[in-house]
Image 1 (tube, rainbow, N blue to C red):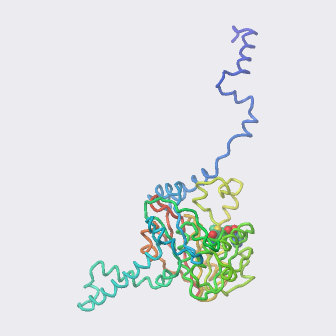
Image 2: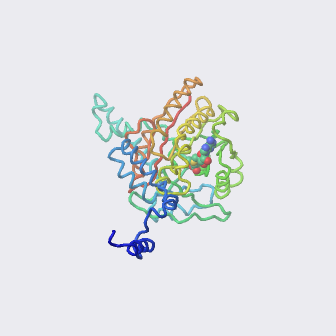
Length: 410
Ligand SMILES: C[S@@+](CC[C@H](N)C(=O)[O-])C[C@H]1O[C@@H](n2cnc3c(N)ncnc32)[C@H](O)[C@@H]1O
């Protein structure tokens, strides 16, 4: 260095000031600027880190395939609009190889019941009835015996078309009929399972506590059974989307049976407690598919950490409000679109405890395991869910995640 002398040192300085084209600038000269513009970790990446850590434990060997599903295009179902003049639509969709997964399950159900009757008649002719059944007959009888509640729920008028497993055809956009009502609503078909689980009966008073943007509200209306439907959502802007859906899909006289409100659902008890036959509590959650794929409105953004951590508490409060809104004997379905047991089973367990300890309300959870059997051609279910049912995303059936659990006030 000494050999360079003053000129040598100045040249060295010049070299430093003017780096060769393409060479990286020296960091220390712009240190503050570099620090200020350092890229933030994208929320989607944070979400995936979080999911990798927790879901690999929860789902074990299933997690890599569920992860792949979350990161690929989701599949949709076309919920037929019974209020539109769209009789040609089923035929149009069937030509494309789509089928109504709900009536297919209903058919399956009837076959089981017929099989069960035959099985019982056959076994009645033999001594020691159970031993005389073939394996198939025994399965049919078991399925039929555990499914009576489903008989009613899937005989409802809800129709939803999906393409077969492995078929990723997209539906065309919805079209209006002569009166301007759209012929179908595109949604994650797994979102219908909580509605089916609710099993709305004629003239039921129904509460949809977190209703916007309104896919499940629309499905509830498709049953044609709601005596009255209260659709609530705390977000005024999202409630506007709910109004738009009602306007685009439902005739005015049906829309008049729906009351749309924007209360904080946690306060619902102060408005109308203990009056509803059926309550849907479709809570805000980490919306895992969205969080893994979209930066916009992502709950894994650093600034929303507190909000995310508080979700299970909010979910518990909303579920408690739903339970208090149901009349004795009434049913509550809790649902999320997350895989997280902390937002799913744990919230339900806590709610059962709180209802008993603080409100002296007893609830029982209804077995929905027959959903797994009936809808296995359409959805991939998690077979180890401790409480309720969980639809897992899968590359061949890329619906969900969707968790749902049914409680009944006794
Ligand atoms: C999963 S989304 C509901 C989706 C809707 N059920 C559907 O099928 O279209 C959860 C909703 O809960 C609403 N929400 C959040 N906090 C709430 C609260 N305290 N009371 C009522 N709704 C709330 C959000 O605005 C959001 O629209």
